[in-house]
Length: 193
Image 1 (cartoon, rainbow, N blue to C red):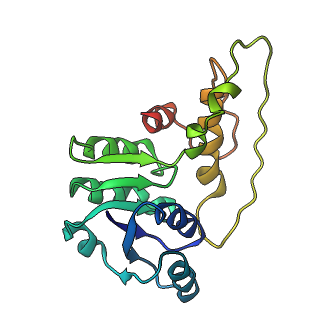
Image 2 (tube, one colour; image 1 turned 90 degrees about the vertical axis):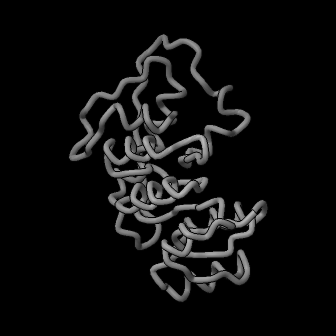
């Protein structure tokens, strides 16, 4: 099965390494960083540098893997979904709940969209779930930014931690004391569906 990759940076390369074991990644959309493209070629072999229009119009490409800056994730996902592609979308999927709702509205019986929360697929994930909450739990999140991408680190990484917390801790609620961070409960609800 043929696939396309949108993005060629560090995380796109991680995803390419995983996906290339199951599908043939034939087309790549990239900002043109030569070092990234050379690294990607070592992972997946020869590929064609493409534009989004090439991927959307190519009926042989069934899967699109999207690993771009957060500001462009929903735009690419919606375009691909509207063209009956199966989409693997890097988290958090969108900058806001409006973008996620648009992604959800673009899903039909002829496509699907999976947003990357891969740790929830691990065999032991359910074993970690707190069965009954008898005490107050305080969560502290710490992050280190890798790479030169321009994503806001809280906006980019907090979604992971919130998703894990929501599924591991019964009755999890967020006290809105996160400084300068947009959070909407519907983002988490849409992402998990």
